[in-house]
Structure formats: structure tokens, C-alpha cells
Amino acid sequence: MRDHDTAPHHPGRRLTTKETAELLGVKPETVYAYVSRGLLSSRRESGGRTSTFEAGEVEALARRNRREAAGSPGTGGELSVRTRITLIEQDRYYYRGVDAVELAGRHSYEEVAEWLWTGRPAPGATFTAPEATVELARRAVEALSGHASAVDRLRVAAIAAAAEDPLRFDLSEEAVLHTARTLIPTLVAALPPVGYDHEDDGPLAHRLWARLTGRPADEASLRVLDTALSLLADHDLAASTLAVRVAASARAHAYAAVSAGLGVLEGPLHGAAGGLAHRMLLDVLDQGTAVPVIAEELRAGRRVPGLGHRLYTGEDPRARVLFELLERIPRAESALLAARDIVATTARHTPLHANVDLALAVFTVSCGMPATAAETIFAVARTAGWIAHALEEYGERPLRMRPSGHYVGPRPPRPLPE
Image 1: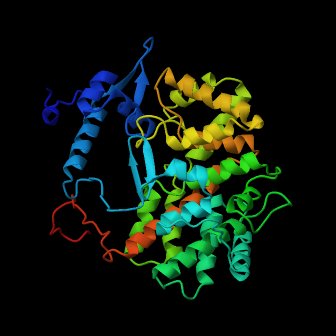
Image 2: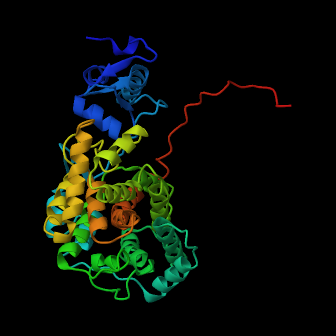
């Protein structure tokens, strides 16, 4: 067995996938997952059929993985947070112990959100917002420039809703649940409608539809949107969710905690993947084949959006469900074929499964939505999970999310700079 701790660094040396997997102590499929997450870069050698990896980069990742496994303080190890909300294991995920896919298939987004918050069934749950709050949020959003992103609008709407709520600092469970049930519909209602015919009551998916496309809604498409909202409601401690818990640990009110999540979501490594997959899908449809589009992505050294997930070695269960629903919509056929072409073409270089971002891209493209629609869907959906995590964190010791820095700068005392 190779002694990984003393493995020498060989500048410029390339490792095969098998050698890389052995050095990292993982399966070859996990190596490809590392590539999809940007943790490793691969290169296909001229005339070769397999990918190779730079030895020094692999060894650095192996050292990092060992530090994280050991949980040494100050070494960048993963923060572990006790939670009863979402469990992800063996390519499945569960909301409070219930299969999230089955829950999303049988219940509305509002009902799923209530389950995340309380762990109690809530048949027929609906969310409504005070007219005064909605009006204030709309005016704030309308004041933004045309360059404002979808997340900009949602963040401003959340801030406006907070300013309208003088009791926002009440962190009791009852008060936070009231905030959650009014904030989510406020976020949706504050978004400018795309078409003339829009609803401000009824199921949340119906209200959101008119903010994403001017096309008339049909039951099959609304079913996809509602299911997507439920599937995306939570996904353990993603970066934005961790930000929410840090804010809640400092006893920020629920609006501020959600704003923290929205701020992180706008980062290009978290919330933008759906939009990138949308644009790539349009390019494939325009070209008629995925080959030149994927070739350009690989030539530029970029990850192919919509493929692979660090938490699933196999298929992303969220993508599987949405693809099954999209197959029932005739107008989605061409986008579905393009998505399959992307997966098959990329598999020649790196075998990866489609993730939920590619499924969302098929939905947004086939429904005539802009590339930003996937990010809007994600943000609205995930607000439910953020509230669930904030509620859970309010029940913990305040300011516990305060790690100690591991100082690696020059040792004091040093003379004052000239």
C-alpha cells in the first residue's frame, strides 16, 4: 500500500484515472465527481481515450482530504452541524426521515415547506402575504435598475418586507413560522410579472409561473414547477444554508437570515449553475449537436454545467424525477434530446450523470423562460429550507457558529511599518 503521507511530488507528471483514484482512496466515479465540482482538473491526452491528472494537484487534494477526515482544528476540515432536517445517503435524500422524492410527488410545495418547518402534515397549506407588505416590496423592486438580477430583486424584497415588520426580532417558533408563511409569497409577488395574466393567490407555483414566462400555464408544466420547488426546498448544509445558520446563530431575525442565504446563492459557484446549463442547452439546440459545444467547454478548461454532484456518486434523484415529468410534456422533447446528447457526449471524456441543474434547464428552455429563471426557482424553493435551518439554529446555543482562525502569518511582535 502506498504511503500517501510521504508520496513525493512529481512536477508535471500525469496520473491515470486509476492511479488518481488509488492515491485519493476513492472509486474512479468519485474522481470524475471531483472534476465536476472543480476540485480537480483533467486533460485528455492527444490520441488517448482516457483523462489524466496532474500529480501535484492530486497529491494536494489527497492531503486536504486527510486533514478534513482527521477534523484537525484550523486545517480547513468540514464543519459538522447536528440537524434533524435533511439526510443525504446512498444517492437518496430525506426530509425529516421521509423520502424527499416521494414527498414531492404527493404534496404541494407549501405542504412540503410546512413539513420541513414543523415535522407535521399540513394538508391544503397555502401562503398569503399582507397587501401592505407586498406593495412595499414591489415598489422597492421596481426602483432597481434594469441590470438587477433575479436574486437582487428577491434580496431587496426580503429587506423591504423586514422593514415593514416591527416584530421581526421575535424569534419564537410561532413568530418565525408566521414570517416564513408571509415572506415566501411576498418574494414571489414582488417579482415583476412577465405576462399580463397573473395570479396573486392560489398555489405558489401558479403565482411564480407568471413571473417566469409569458406563455400560458398548463397543468403538466405547473406540476413540474411545483415538484421542482419541493425537491429544491432543502439539501443539507449547502453554502447558502450554512450562511443562514451563521446568521441565525448570531440571532439575526428570519428576514436577515434569508438575506444571508440569498447573498451566497448569487455566487457563481452555487446559484448560477442552472443558468449556465440553460445557455449551454440553447447552444446545443442551435448547433443541432452537443459535440462542438462540449468540445469548447473542455478546450476552455471549464466544467460542463449540469453534470455530476459531489453528494451523489450515481444519479441525482431530483434530476431523475424532473426528467420523468418533462417526458410527459410534448414541447420539452427537443430540449430533452439535447440534454441526453450532452450527457452522452461528455461521457466520452468524463462519465457523469445529469444533475438537477440540467433538468431545470430543460424545463426553463422548453417553457420559454430566461436563463435566470432557474436561479429564481432555486431561490424561492430554498427559502423554505433556510427558514427550517434558522428555526433549528435558534434552538441552539447563541454564537456557536464561531470557529477559531488558524493564524499562519508572521509572528509578532513586528516593528511598525515605515
